[in-house]
Length: 134
Image 1 (cartoon, helix red, strand yellow):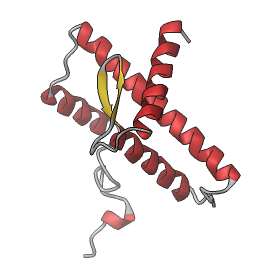
Image 2 (image 1 turned 120 degrees about the vertical axis):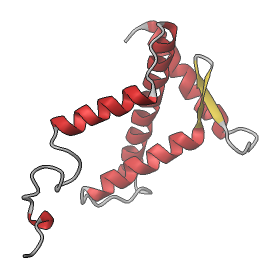
Image 3 (image 1 turned 180 degrees about the vertical axis):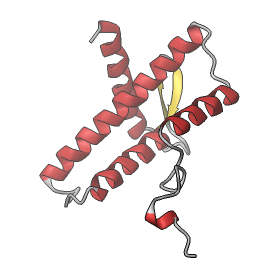
Image 4 (image 1 turned 45 degrees about the horizontal axis):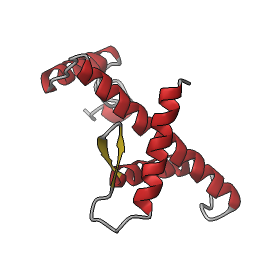
């Protein structure tokens, strides 16, 4: 990991910690190289990751020591991902890389086609839930 990346990560961690102790603003934010990111987004992704973990069938008490360790791992992972995404967006902007909604739709359509469409009925329709009674 480069010195710059460590500085970016440390700055983001500090900003999140500072925002948590902040003035109680309606939408507190932290920044990656000056680009603002919402703390609400961070909390939303953390909650989603917690739910994903619970859906695996694992029994977890988020208040226990092991639950707190698991939560800290999730929070750390989400923070790293937000910082990574922020840096990638900044580098893309610096290099003039622009993704239009049409580009995104085209890429999504290509991915859907490559994987047989969306949902169990998108392919040939032979999935039992897709069959209609005669």
